[in-house]
Length: 189
Image 1: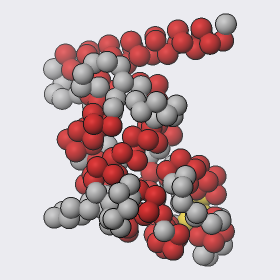
Image 2: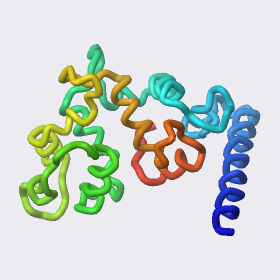
Image 3: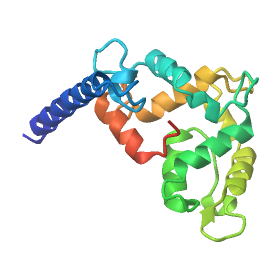
């Protein structure tokens, strides 16, 4: 019974998200909000592939948070600063719970050590400088480097973002996963 209610609720939410995107686009208020699921779902199949996600990310400036102008790859410092913004959910620095959740989802294959090793001043939260230093010392960049060439290409970054939003691991992000990811992370769009 629980599964049927969850399925029905998911279908209802999917329909509401699609209808909301259509209504906002039809209101004449300019372009639809880039956070709306329908903007990502370019083929209208109620799911977003890595390719659709990559197109959306490029079109809506997501990469600009992580790639400096004129650069072709994502630098370690820019990546650490971007993750700091995403993981700093409460806006007061990254506490241990935010760090643990961020590390679990964003860097599951990386050996990051312990939060206390990153919290150099021992105040219970990471500031941006501590995040950059900890990320560099832990080799966190390797977690994004799919081809192992020591550099993060924009497509590798976007693939990692897609993986984080794809909570059930089926290689597709549905509207519920999209909403959950937006709620969980400080999305830069």
